[in-house]
Image (cartoon, rainbow, N blue to C red):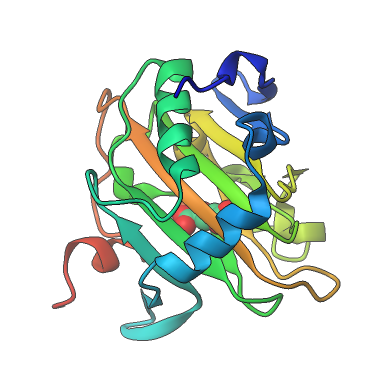
Length: 221
Ligand SMILES: O=C(O)CCC(=O)C(=O)O
Ligand SMILES: [Fe+2]
């Protein structure tokens, strides 16, 4: 079935001369689907695992669940295939498998970080299809990363994607900016993000392990 992506507007917020985030509000509705059906299918169809991060020399539980669909694996809802095809057409690059994060309620969160496991960070695309309750999605220039006492810990942009919205961080966003899903000010229900990543592999790869790296590359340290 043809994906009617031409009818879906991508609005670009330019973060600086090399970094941007595209926001397509109502993306799932624009594909002709009900985001609540997609949320339920993904929540019930993904084998969720407790996320783990390596911090302060030990493994700790990450306050959210994670999941993965490798390329070619059957997706729990056709919207996942349609979204991948739509972003491949829109950006003219190929995305591989899809990873997922599940914030069961407001007490789950993801701290400000960069997706350093992409390694080549000068030109990347990180596409996030968001389902469930709207929560803040903060972007912080790396220059503000020690501003812990500033409002929002130095984050200056909140794109706050809601149920069925798609956001895409692009350009040098993983080099110069951090992003995160903080705890919201008021209680919420569940939120799921489906995530596709691409890097141009141009420029200098980052060296050294990030706190996320052990989860992806090795558990023995
Ligand atoms: O859930 C989200 O919207 C973002 C998650 C994220 O940044 C990550 O898993 O690297
Ligand atoms: Fe991330």
